[in-house]
Amino acid sequence: MEAKNKGKAAAAKAAVDNHVKTSQVVGIGSGSTIVFAVQRIAERVKDEGLSVICIPTSFQARQLIQENGLTLGSLDRNPKIDVAIDGADEVDKDMNCIKGGGACQTQEKIVASNAKEFYIIADISKQSKELGTTWKQGIPIEVIPSAYRPVQLTLEEMLGGQANLRMGVKKAGPVVTDNGNFVIDWQFQSLPKDWNKINQQIVLIPGVLDTGLFINMAKKAYFGREDGSLVEQTK
Ligand SMILES: O=C[C@H](O)[C@H](O)[C@H](O)COP(=O)(O)O
Image (cartoon, rainbow, N blue to C red):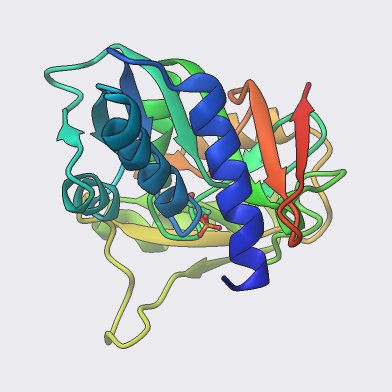
């Protein structure tokens, strides 16, 4: 297994083994790390008869749940989630995160905020002392397509920096989210001191759905090192 994947797999296994119990409703995040968590849940279903309902946060998560033979639920049928597990692009010492490198942040935030407990799994490169110092691609912000230009201008006038429309790779034009919207990656000029305030300011711009700033939501983070060892972090 590739070294980075060893860290991701170790973090995923620890979170699933420590926090997922039978009969629970489990929120399934998106990205490359969550793949290992879903595989571990599937292993426990097979080996121990674990029985859980999985709530996806994206098209990718939905596919993963189905491909691994797990029970697919929905927020309509299972609005109360026991535990949610997800990856992150950066996690600071207070457990605040930047998410949305894969454009899934809005559904991820809905699922995480309706979960009694929310756990982050990541390789050790995602651990950061101060939010905004390691993830350099900007804060992901989902916007309604017709509003993308005014939102870009408002962000730049209000907060400075640069607000870039995320463009597709192997697809002409912008990235389109699972909700049919666009993503703006806001790159700040100077490191914000109060991320909570910044998040609230951005969310209030008409046309913005949500941001990839997850402030004070995660209970614990599991970071895996390349040798498979773990770093556990709480606030
Ligand atoms: O939109 C994507 C999500 O927020 C992911 O959870 C995040 O980008 C981390 O992904 P990965 O596990 O691939 O590092």
